[in-house]
Length: 169
Image (cartoon, rainbow, N blue to C red; front, side):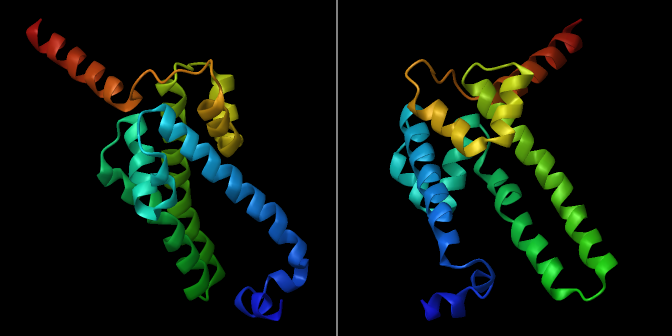
């Protein structure tokens, strides 16, 4: 037990009991992504491979693999800005400047996840963003939920179609 406290000193404030809910959330997350990937016709095992996990998740919405950088890069940058800068204003200002666009991007990705399953109500968007792990679990395990196809590609095709239509007119 002492080795755990050496590796994670913050646990000494809470105790080892905090590990139980953390492991439960990790288990729910793995089950949710595995079932979601299977439902979308992708390999479920991809949820266990760190970088491929993000690429596969974005593939469900139709986003290119290059967008995975926008998902994975900001959290380490936020943590680094909080650790390495001594000035509080600089610390939190830089962290907020990185976090706000990242939160907006991730919200848009989760909204596209809802749209990929045919959910277009604001209430569904709120549920997906706030309870995303459990909402993804619901999408993956529910028999009534059907994958409709990537939402990101559809929105880009609509934009291209409308711009082409305006050029022809």
